[in-house]
Image (cartoon, rainbow, N blue to C red):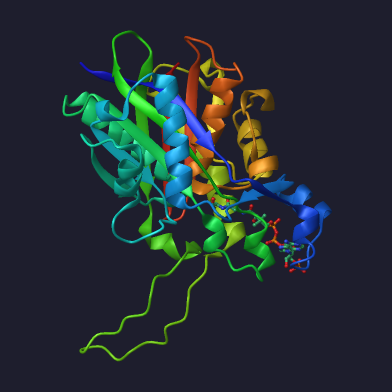
Length: 324
Ligand code: UT7
């Protein structure tokens, strides 16, 4: 049976880094409040960069590590909820930049779980034999979607992109199991609405631009419950315990969420690498950026077991168990 594995990772962060002190000149907040409640100290904000340019840069790094030329990629999947255009999709625009002319391309919008959903989709295409090499990208320019007068959201998010190349695995490394779920009935907890309806059969609605809105406490409670639940399910059904996992790469939303997950699972925090202090919450990009950092700084070793876990708008959640 064909199994997929990650053969290259890449990431990109915008040049501008905005710290909490700067934010406190824009909205009524403080470095102390943001650091204590979230663990975030600074985040990268796209100025010249776009969702496509960041995704392209991350993809180039991943392809270089995988030692694959773009024409060897047969599927490009971009996870994002902040595309530059509604159409063409982000993956097609990145394809054009890369010259990956043999690929078919589409986007996945599952907010902060997007990269996990995309990995699972890529794995399924490889597993079925339909694809050999898949480029999976998480890329977000959330700074365009936040209301910069709303201190409860604008302090949390950052921009950036991460990517991974998946190929059929010829050894015992690679993806072992996935888990994903959604609860659309709770969608209003975290939302970003689109343009107003205006057609001949519908009275024109006021065309106001919509910004990201979040019930932070509800998302917090959901995440703190969902992460340990996913970890226990994934490990349990594969004959493992949480202690058998070397590294937990969780969506980087809030240090307190990650600490709560570590506590519930009775694991040391050292197994939960983090970069949210300098990146903030980059939604679909957060896990691939962290994965690339861990990969490049040598903290992942051949044979290590990893769990990647995301949660967010939709509501959506997803996890992957893999052997490095
Ligand atoms: O990737 C998507 C997933 N999103 C998340 O995972 C976010 C999950 N939620 C969270 O991380 C936390 O709920 C937040 C960081 C968003 C908020 O932390 P909290 O401890 O839940 O604070 P809170 O919303 O209960 O607000 C506490 C107080 C409020 O003031 P009052 O009503 O107690 O007077 C807020 O108005 O803090 C106030 N507040 C702020 N104060 C200073 C809210 N934002 C700020 C701010 N600076 N930036």
